[in-house]
Image (cartoon, rainbow, N blue to C red):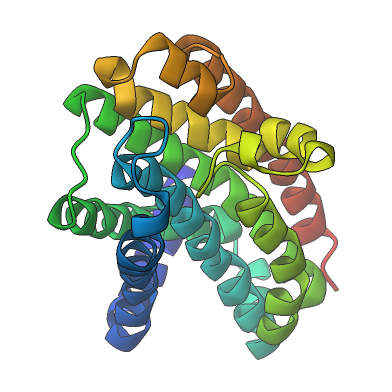
Length: 263
């Protein structure tokens, strides 16, 4: 299974490198979001609870980036299904899970590169993490979350079998989860009826865990309570890992079953 997964990942990476315009456009989006939020909205929101807004913003943009970038998994699988490539693979003596496993591995590596570009852009506009080790741990946490979400996209890609339908199916799910979260503003500024959902949904939990690792000791206890809902770093990281593992296991099982039952 491992060798088959790596072989498929290599094929998918080579395919991406032969379409450099796709990679470039994927990198432009997070850069544009950083610049727009930093310079268009940052002036109105800056000084948030005594924290530099760009330090608050970058973890949110990072999670948004990996969520949208993970959609490539579903698009590519739907495209391979539409062209009949998946059915040719099913006739070979290879691990069935390697088909979408290789796709997820390749897209995770692409997400890692995109995350590096995003962090570099953040540094260029004033992002200064208090803890370099925390920044590395936060990046690893985000990549693990992207891997789990990619399995969800893979399931959608195999279910709808059309790249256009994948976009139509995922946008109504990912868009509300991203913007009804703590990505861009504190949950406390939202209507009371929305705060419960925005606080406990997985995107907010992962963002707050990454933000807690990055902010580290640069924020006072009062600021951390206001920005992170009073939860400690270890609690947030544990919650984010539980969400990530749960999403990965559930969608991984469904992906395997769906692939076996493709007709």
